[in-house]
Structures are given as C-alpha cells and as structure tokens.
Amino acid sequence: MKSPVHRCRDVEHTRGQAGQGSNCLQPEHRIPISKDVITSSSASAMWFIRDICGIVCAIITWLLVFYAVFVVLFVLLLPSKNLVYSIVNGSVFNSLAFLALASHLRAMCTDPGAVPKGNATKEYIESLQLKPGQVVYKCPKCCSIKPDRAHHCSVCKRCIRKMDHHCPWVNNCVGENNQKYFVLFTMYIALISLHSLIMVVFHFLNCFEDDWTKCSTFSPPATVILLILLCFEGLLFLIFTSVMFGTQVHSICTDETGIERLKGETGKWGKVPCWEAMEMAFGGSFSLSWCSPFSGLSCKTSPPAHSNVPQGEIIEEDVIEIPLN
Image (cartoon, rainbow, N blue to C red; front, side, top):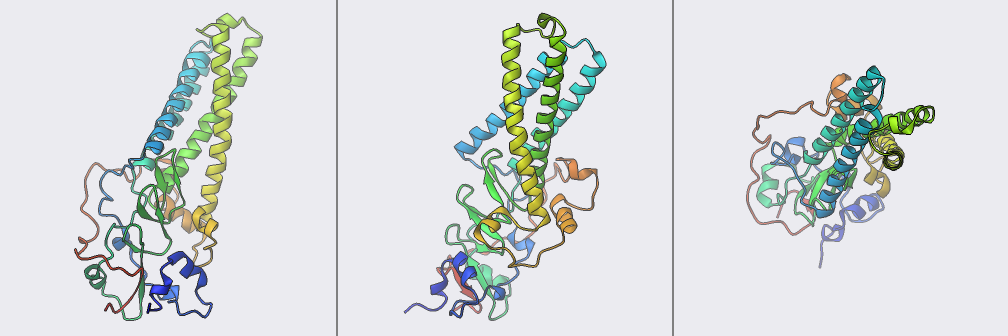
C-alpha cells in the first residue's frame, strides 16, 4: 500500500491541492533551498543548448540583423549627401545593433539558473542538515532537488529556477540569471527596428524630390525591394520585441514569471516590491550598467560556489520527507 508521500507524485498538482484536506504534505513545509545549493556547477563555464531548432533560429536572428545593417549602410546612409546625417545615424544604428547582438549572445550563453542534475540522493539530502518534518521535492525527469519557483524545461532537459519560458530565438531558457540580457536584447532590437523605419521614411521623402538613380548605389528596382524587405522586417520585429519587452518588464515588476502565470501559481510566495525586483533582475542599484550586456562579464574562471554533490543512488520518491528512512 502506497504512503501519503507516494500519492503526491505530481508536484505541480500537489501545490494546487494543498490545503484541501488531503493527506498530502503541505508546500509551506518545504525546505527553503539556498542559492548556493541550486546554482549549477557549470555556472562559471560556457552554457550552450544543443538544440537544432534553437541554433537555426539564433543564426537567422543574426542574419536578419546583419541584413538590416547592410541595407542601412549601403542603401540609406552612404549614398546620402549629408555627411553629418550619415555619421550620426550610422554610429547610433551600429552601436544599437552591436549591443543587441551582444545581449543575444549573453542570453544564449548564460546559465539561466539550472538546478544541479541528479542530486536527489540520500547522501546529498543528508548533507543539507534539514530538520525533521521538512519536505523536499524531486523532479522525476532530471532527478534533481527542485526548489520553489523552478520548472523543468524539456528542451534544456534541466529544472530552471524562475523559468519564464524557453525562447528558440536565443536558444535558451529565460530564467533567473539571464533575464536581464533577454530584456536588453528585445529592447535594442525594438530600437534599431524603429530607427531603421524612420530612416526609410526620410529616404523615400528625399528620393521623391530627387533622381532615384542618385539615391542609392543600387538600381531603383533593387533599392525599392531592399527597402520594402527592411520595412517589413523592421515593422514585424518592432511589434514583436516591443510586446516581449513590455511582458518581461511586467513579469519582473510583479515578481511573477510567465509560466507561473500560465499555471496559476501566483500568490504562493512572498512577492518583493517592483523596484527591488528590478534591482535583483538587473544586478544592483540603478546605473548605466543596467543597459550594458557586459556587466558582470569576466574572463576569469571562478570555482563553484558550492561543494560537490555527494554521489549515491537516486531516491525513488518524488516528495521526500525528513528524516529519510
């Protein structure tokens, strides 16, 4: 006969059914697992997901940015007679494009907050020195001790702390450690999209008053096609990234991830105020470093922030009560 612990194998349903008079263990009895415990042992190393769909989407993203840079430089700016106009707009656009690609690279190659894989062992749980009556949950898919607000990603094949969603365009999950870079990526893409659309409008207005053959180094049909494609790309990504940027900022301010909102898990933890949540997500008090994808970047390899996980046999139960049998 199965114990009450075995009857609570579905962790997500256990949370939803807590307090309904069942024999299931209450979620408030869970051990508050510290950040040192849940930080991946590879947090200081390169992180990259080997997903074909994500890699293709990431390559397409870079190609689209390079296409926009090509059209802006060789169709809009270089043929312009106004040197100051070309220098100023070229500098601004290329700087924003560089920051967008740097943010994309950081979002893609930063550990989003992966929980150590395969640490649901008796030896490891005993090393945490928990109190009798406390409860920890094991993810049945990656066999890791699952902290609060962590969800399993089927693409990353790991539990990700404060997982918002898995984004194929950055080939990574958006989680606790890389949400800032994803927000910056969407912001800079929206800015270069808007900037390119404004420059296209000015270019069309100027060319209507001048000879089309003097407005571009390309032929008039080729110029029109390149600009139409740029307008379509700019308008599409302006709408998409603006919505994503607003959604992410709203999630940070409300201290609520997209997957938590989707699963109705709101209000099950102590939420922090909006500005405090922004400081936590962007790494400190408000400064220009909030807009920099290079903040916190170091070439030095630091040792793991936690001790090695004691080896042992994976515990079968998904809901583990202390003391262990």
